Image (cartoon, rainbow, N blue to C red; front, side, top):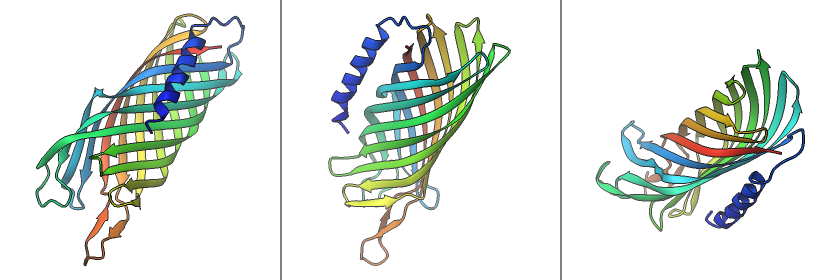
Length: 275
């Protein structure tokens, strides 16, 4: 995934050129945005009896990256509009691992180390908006997405979680003299083809499921007819269900990916440009 870095820098550079270029058109059909993202992670894996196997933790500065968005306004009048949007986010950084060494008889907390993480999330969505009393906007829509989380516990043990998802969404926002916009959005991501690859075992596990529920609180400031500045806080809960088993051939010994939950929080600061 690291080869994406150079291409991402090109994307950001081109996007910043667009943002700093003035648009003279009366109607703004296209929307582009770039934001810098910090992510805090609180991840826990559970044994089959419910006890904790290991955890991963980070602050907003430990995992950071960028999100870019491109949208097209397919329809708009005074009371409603519709939009197609493509989003791409990539984050990287270290988390604090607390658990135990693989194949160790010692329990949780016997081993503490750092884990290198890369998170990629992308989706394309269709959203419809309806305006009431020129002050309240109701938003609803659906998206199709892909998520990838690469978790390098060591040079020889790299776990890669991947899945596609269907993402229905619902939101509300309010306006303040057409300058400030406050909102709240709820999105549910239902995972499809949920997999976890283990490099040390050279095996791909099929996860029992991988779902995400998130609530976002965006605030935007309309600088002029083309440019908005925005801040967004997102609370996200990720749930992964236990995978299938890989038997070792030594009696009843087997490997599997345990069930887990992750409470991921995001802070985003960015700029949106309409042209």
